[in-house]
Image 1 (cartoon, helix red, strand yellow):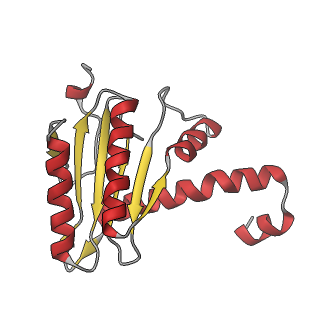
Image 2 (tube, rainbow, N blue to C red; image 1 turned 45 degrees about the vertical axis):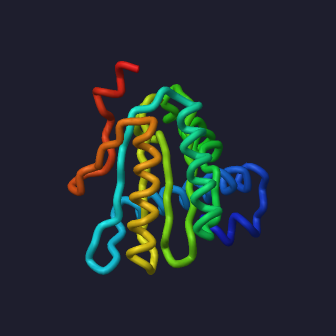
Length: 170
């Protein structure tokens, strides 16, 4: 069934499914770009940190919202879509999935999620825009702010963020 046929058919179940899937696909696309995108031969960056739960994730979301405002990016709260999609697919991890992102048309972006990790850890991905200096300034400033409250570690290039045993003790 194509997107067009779903829209033309317009059944409420199909529309609800579409309303859940489209934001999730957009978020996954952004995370993929943040994780693997290359700009002038340089990989975008990702960091990971242990958190104390929902309040910490919401604080990081607020930081992303502020960064979006200062950098001319559009802010998105993706968590409700991710959470609902995981529930409807029977793959919910048992804790609230949270996710926030911001992006700009030139590719500059930042996102945070706990999806695929645990309730006590988060991954923050950064995608490069057209200005390498602006990207580096945003990355350095954001990671510096994160380091004021949490211990931040780089995610190795050879894999994405993985569940961390050191976050299980929280």
